[in-house]
Length: 555
Image (cartoon, rainbow, N blue to C red; front, side):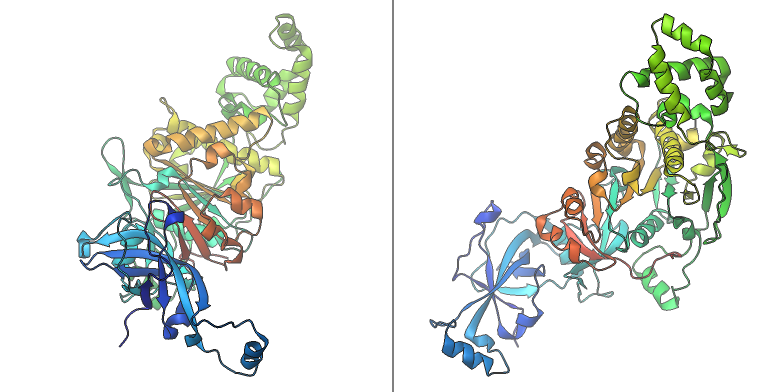
C-alpha cells in the first residue's frame, strides 16, 4: 500500500538555503490524499541515514499536468456538464517550509537548524509521533499546560494515547528562568474565551506540585494575586460541575490540574456607598481599605487628573511635609484640611518652593480624587500582607462593585504598586511579599498600563516597567489580560515573553501583538478557545485549542 501523502518533487526546484526566500521545497501530493491536506499541516521527510526533516505546508496549488489549455469554451462546458472533478488531470503541489532537522530516537531525540536538502522522491508523511512533533517545534515535555496543538482549528492527532499533542510552557530553571517570571500577555476580544483560558492557566500555576526555589534555598509554591474587574476569578475556589468523572480522568492522564482551588480568598476593597455582592462563588471574603500612608511612596494615587512637570514636584513637597507632621497615621481627610491652611500656602510661596498658582492647581487636583477610597472602616491592606500573598494561594481583588472607574484605578494601582515595591525594594516592608514567588494577574490591563501624557501615568508605567525588567531575578511575574493590547505601554509590552492571542477583530490590535504574519492572518477567524502562542524562548510559534471545559467554575 502507499505510504505518506506524496513525494518530494524536483520539477520546480529543490533547494534549502539560509535565507527563507531562497528555499524551494515542494511535494507532489497524490490524488487520494489531496482532500486531507491543509495549510499549516506538519510533515516529516526522511533522509537516507534516518534523520528527518520537520516542515510545514505553507502553500497549496494545482498545476497543469498536460500541455493543454483548460481556459477554453469547450473545456469549461465539458466540466459544467460533469458531476465530478478529475484530479489526475492536474498536479497538486504543496510548498513546504523547513523548520528543523530531527535526529536520534526516544529520550535522545534532538533538533537542529535545517542544514540538509532532502532527496528527490523522498516520501512526505504527516507528522504523527508526539515526540517528533514536540522535538520539531521545540515544545517542552514538562511545564504549564496551555492547550493542544492544532492546525486550522483541528487538533493534531498522533498514534499515541492520548492522541493529542499537549503544549506546555517551560517552568523550571534547567534552561533559564521559568517563563512565568518573564511575563505573559493574554489578548482576545469579547467572547473569545480569554477569561476561560486565563483561569485554566492560572489553575496550573497553583498546582500543589509546582514549586520554585527561594533565596534561602527553600522550595515554595507560587502566590497568585488576580485583579478582577468582572467578579469572575473568585469562582476558581469552586469546582466546575461540568467536569464529570471521565473528563477528570482524561485531565489527570495528561497531567492537567483541575478542580476548585480551596486556598482562594476574595480580598474586597471597602469603599463608601459600595457593597460587594459576591454571589457567584464560595470563597472566603476579607475586606480591606487603602491607607492614605501609601501615598507617601505612591504620590500618583492622589493626583486627581493630569499634573505637569512643575506640579508633580509640588505635590511631593506637600506630601512629604504632611507625613513629617502627621506620620503614617495621617489620613486623606486630614491632608485636605492641611491644604486649606493659608499660612502653609504663603510660607511655601515666599520661600520659593511652591508658587501659589501651582499650590492651587495641586490642591484642585487632589480634591478631584474620588472620595470614600482611603481610610475606610476595614483593615489596611498594608496589615494584610500574609493574607494577600500566600504560597500556593489565590488572592482575588474584585473591583466590579466600585462605582467609578477612578476608584477602581486607585485600588488596583495601590495594591499592585505595594506588591511591586516590596518585591523590588532592598528594604521591603513585608518579608512575606519579598520572599514568596509571585504572579500578578491584571485583567483589563490596558486601563492601568497605558501610555499617557500626564506625569503620574508615566510614573505608573515606569513602576511596572521596572517590575517587568527585574521580575525574573526577583521571582515576580506579570500575567496581563486585555482586549486592547495596542494600548499597553511599549516599555512594559516589550518585556513580555509569552503572548497568547485569541480572536481579535481589530487590525491595530492584531498588529500590535507582533506575531508572525502567517498566524496573524488566522486571528480574526479563530473560534472561541482557539489561540496562537508566540513564545520565542519556549517553542516555535504555534496554533492551539484550549480546553473546552474550564478546570474550575466559570460563568
